Image (cartoon, rainbow, N blue to C red; front, side, top):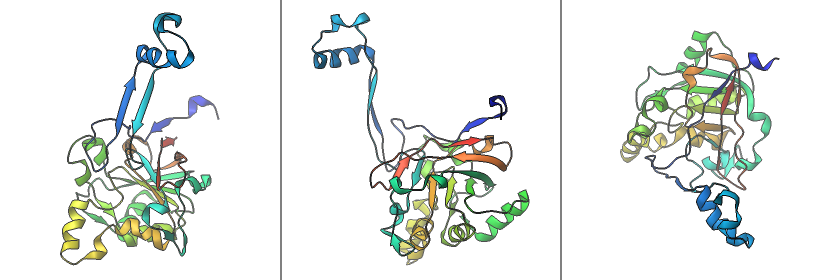
Length: 255
């Protein structure tokens, strides 16, 4: 296929400083002049020895693995998955990470709404699509487009709980994703319910991964820019972090 017929749509949010949330990123920027000052002595040189007094720009980053667009491994959900040791991010099969994608539109659902199995079935019926094994299912809430970088970002999305997550896995799905802070409903909705004795309402979509193996991608964006709800590929290869629970990912839709 000629390159002129391929469109790449960036589905990823950037790692950056000053993003509100439970986890923070700290990026220290070193420009070309600073690079020369820091590197020259290590090379046995002076800044004057370096043409133009400039060397390589470098960034030093301190951050958690669940910052920005990231790929959660089964190990994030619990120590076991389906009765076996849960896979860490460096053990995720690469064939799970590049497959046909399908977007299910739930932009009409408000903050804290629990997406059900019936909601998934109705969304698939609307677009006349039947799931097949290894499809990458992307839940579109529109939240990252509206609220990324704002203090309320982690409180504005609907979520996917235990039963719909298990239903997707039963269709052969191994990777899902959402354009919001988390796969489950916001903690601001779940935590008060847990305090009322509804412990099963805490992180049910994540904990479903201990019953049956799957992965999900959080903090996607631009799902509305994919021209059709299916008929495209998703490439989402996570950074290979030894024994990691997640890895940052540059997720892309290829149309």
